[in-house]
Image (cartoon, rainbow, N blue to C red; front, side, top):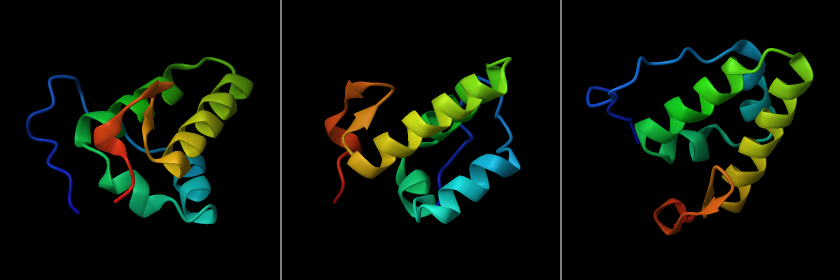
Length: 84
């Protein structure tokens, strides 16, 4: 699935190399790309806004767990994100 970022109201955040690496290592890149564009962008913005590396890693870990679960987004149940 290719996400359509054209309707985003916020600036599109770049994906840092450490996020790409983690998604690939955990086999979650497809799950990430299956999420709506706003969720992908929100995750990256949230991770990138952290000042400390420890906080970035903690947020990355949360995103990975949520992608594995499939029905959670930003610590909230999100039925439309459920795995198919």
